[in-house]
Each structure stands twice: as structure tokens, then as C-alpha cells.
Length: 449
Image 1 (cartoon, rainbow, N blue to C red):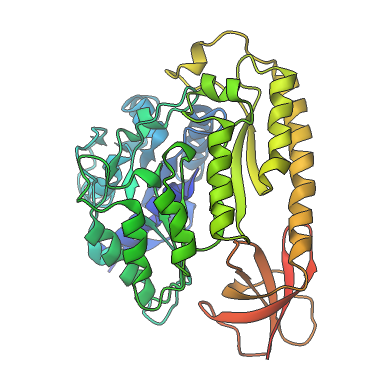
Image 2 (cartoon, rainbow, N blue to C red; image 1 turned 90 degrees about the horizontal axis):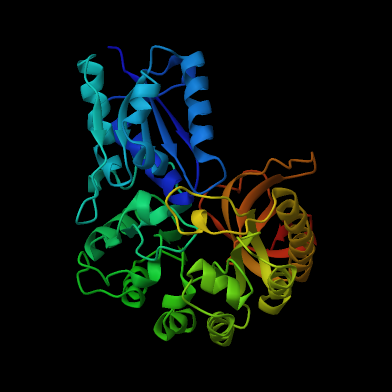
């Protein structure tokens, strides 16, 4: 019996990756099998509108898909699908499904219908009033039960109400809505049953979980407590957090819950108060530092990463220098930094005094050079430390020496390569190690007896 094939192409954030993985599992449950692009009957393209020139990248990707496999049914989902809608079908006749962020839950069944009805085209572009939850039996995947999944990601909410001046996310993902606490806990338990020892909770602004019409009375700190109670779960992380909404109770969780890793991605965007006001971020540097200082009081070994925008409209050299100073002031171990670019419909797109792209690039190069230096310095401070590493897969750095190298991450999220005795490494195993060497972007460690 012929099993239809599918192929997923994903751009953007971890939430998009998580959505695509769910679609893949749902299609497998419906009798599909994953195949190379050239052999697939359906192609799922999950899009992102945060990075530069997102529409152009999607049109280019659709052109490549058509060239590789003109017979496949193509579905486009995510932020660019929400933004362009059925225009994608008009410009690319091969596209027969468009689904916004809330519509992704309908994509697997849509593909089944589209294969059965060659003339059909479907669009799911309406924002829903409640979190569009998915078939819970798929949460743990459909792989072999003896195949461990060391690291898992669980969506806890969707959408955003902040409307920062530069950001298109509220327009493409809609208003915020929280998932039910029970659904989150059920999915977390399912992942732990499959071997996950490290779970990351995902949302556009996790700090306000439960504080919307879809909330069931559970706050984010309480959700963290309840997830931490799941037997067998050793590590919890979350992303993204918003400095404005970061409560003292959430800070206290880092001292209270040993499962909560001492690592956080806390977007700053700019170190200048005047830029933060123009960006509509809703906090000052003093407020940001209150959160940073509170986190480090709760856990002195706390590690921070961040997002930074360079060349926002009217940014002066002095304001840019304020951002450079913050890299050291906040002690960021790493950062994701980008040149500002317009997004249609946002307030910033209509702002005057745009910074020339050449100047943006020059500033970005200075910022990244400084951050790279600090990132390498951070890794050097790890040398000699005794910690635990969650093994995920054999390392690509095999060097022919006795034993096998395995890759994993420590509680701070650093990539670590561990030499394991022959036959002892496996995904999902926690290993006590000593860090022996810092590479440019990773660490080398030995297993302790």
C-alpha cells in the first residue's frame, strides 16, 4: 500500500520548529512518511517574518520547491502566511493551503483532504479566541517507544499584545492566549515518558501566562512549580521572557526550584533609555537591571543571553555606545544581534531618520566583535568546573582517540563534547563531567568515574 510522503521546510524561531515537528508527527499518525523534497506528495513550509526580507525568502523557497518537485501539494504556514494570505496561492499556483499561526492545528487534516480533492484550496487565517490546542495523543510523538527524546519543547501560549514599534508578531500571531495548564502538564509528562530530561516552555511572553481570557487561573510561577513536580524531569527552561512583566515571584522560582536552569534569554534590544522608549519596550535600563540583579541574587551562577537591535531609526552613536556598555554591564554570555529593518504596518516603519545600511552594518560588526570576545571569555571560565551534561547525540568532532565523543548541554545551555567509554553513551543520559577545555563555541569534558 502506497504511503504518501511529506517534507517540512522551517524558517524562524524554536516555536516554528516545534510547530513543524508537531505537523510531522501528526502526518505520520495519518499514514504519511517523511521523504526527501523531490519525492514528497505534500510539502509544509513554515515561515517567519521577524528576520530581514522574509517575503522574498518565502517566494524564493517556493520557487526552489517548484523546481525540485512541481507535482507536490504545498502548504505555507506561519507568520508570512498570515501576512500575505491567499495572495500566496495567486502568485504560486502550487500552493493549495495557507495557514496562519492559529491555523497550523488544521494543517495535517487539510493535507489529507487536498490529496483526495485535487481542485480544493484551503485557507485558515482567522485568529481564534482561545489557544488552538492539538491532538494530545500526538504530544509525545510517534517514533519507536525505545527511542529517547532527551530535549523537548512545549508551547504554553500563543500571540502577543505588546506591539513594540518594530515588531510584526502581534499582527501575524494575534492576541495572546494561554494554553490550559492541564494540557501543558500532560504534554510535559508525555515527553518525560519518552526520555526527556530537559523541557523548554515556549511562548511570545511567558511571563503573562494565564493573565488573559484563555487563562485558567494558573500564573506562570505556579505553572513552573507544577511542571517541576513531574517525576523524572531534571531541567526546566523557558523562552521568551519580557523584562517589563518579569515578576519577583518568577525570580524567586530560580532559588526555589532546583530543576529551573540558571540560564535565561532576556531580550534587551537596546541599552539606551531613549531608544527603549521609541521602541515601545515599556521598561528602562534601571528596570532591566533590577531583573538581572534579582536573578543573580537568586542564583549567583546565573547566565544571561539577549536580543539586540542595531541602527533603530534615529539611533545616535552615543545611544549605540550605551548598548555596547550593556554587554559588560549585564554580563551577557551571548546575544542575537541584528540590523533594524522595516516591517510593514509597524510604527517604526513610518519613523523618520532611518540609519543608512552601511552604518548599521559597521555598528553591528563592532557589537558582534565585542560579544564574541565576551562569549569566548565565558566559556574559558567553565574550564575546571564539575557539572552534569545531558547527552543528546554522538558528536561530530570524533577524533579517533579511544572512546566516543558525545554532544550535550550543561545546565547553562553550553554545548559540551564528552568522551565516553565505548558503548556507554546514549541519548538522554545525564553524565557527571569535568570541563577540560574551551573551544571557540563549545566545551570539551571528560566523564567522571
